[in-house]
Length: 592
Image (cartoon, rainbow, N blue to C red; front, side):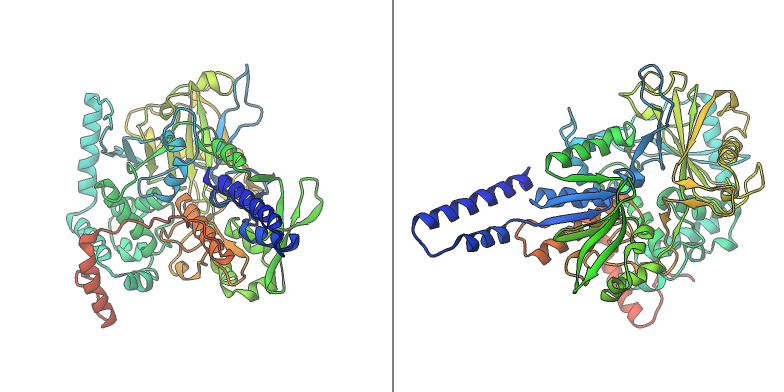
């Protein structure tokens, strides 16, 4: 690769220059030659955290010749990784595949797909990017009514086979939805979308950032279906956040991007994309292998306790090894790539005083969003894509995976041979009572959480005379190991999700800090995609590397950072709105 090659070329050129000078009898000393060589050779970087942000930073730095060590407390890939269910393998098979939550890589992403194209994978001309597949539909599963199945058209998509009963159910769902959301509510929602599309950046950053999505679309005054589909359903399915709290700027910016993605504008690919195998097999393991080939070193099982600061610079990182021993690691530069809830615990008072934006990170909020997998002895007749159980108290979203893994024979490759599929479910609401025990997810034991989620899935899917999930087909389940202590007074989640309450945007830090050798990478860092996503983690890592290159005086090429798509047709309307905003006037389309 270019990075390692550049490093070798730099070393060879420096050695040749020193040898030539000696032969000519110049006065240049060996000490001066060594100093010149050192200034031309990229330095060392400690990347603190091995999730998507940390691996991205390591990738970009290694390609530019830096000596990189990644320190990770648990497992490379972070929340994006997949894992095996301990003790589930039999007969030479691999363990049943599990994950923190299912991967979703939409076409609005550009930076992460660029990285994926640069990770080699056997037989793939575009690396692991070719392991992305596109579901052809999605569904709003509604309790007591027909589920609303929506096609996701894209060139090359093969529409699912339909029976006469499927057509009847689809038409029934559409008619029920039309009756459930009155025309004046639909018109109002469309107006709110148009208001945001034509709002200038200043109005978005100030007014709409301070306005919760629930309030912006006046969900409190609207029908049940309006609330569940256009408020809750949109935010859960598209931006994985809570409609009642999330800022309009965050939700609507992503909704805008998805609308243009669906229209084929500014898209890297289809609206919905997932991996064609468990995440580690399709992406993370090949990535780690590639980074290793570039010279990146990995120190897994190391927990960062404190980022040490003295004399205006970071002087090291105090870590704990797997055996509990504490030590200090040092480098020329440090990229802090841990999730914000872990990173901010490592920033001492002196470091925070050196850059006030670090202290503002204490105002950022995280919440629980955790995955559970159900392994089935028969494939459920669901759909080719994601389903959103919009009426479920715990805000469940799910996808059935085996059908999307064409090169895997699930029962032959995983587990004990009895399980033929995996239904992967995300639990987004942990603080509302369920339907089985009347308790919140945090108040339930692990076994009770599994039974409650299964009951809510059946309530959403087995409610109109068609049995989709059978108790007899449930082989086993696996709940994310990051969750601990549920059912006790002190539940803990090691993998919380950054959320976006109104006003959050102004507390997000930049990748470059005031400390000359410290840089931040993670989905909490301020980048164009204002959402806790793998794309945000990737873009922030690129920004951190660019800032590091600037500080180091490097002439290496900077990382490209692609922003969200902006439709040129709306720029004139945004300029007009900027004038109105500065005059204190509302958007010209705003009906209030």
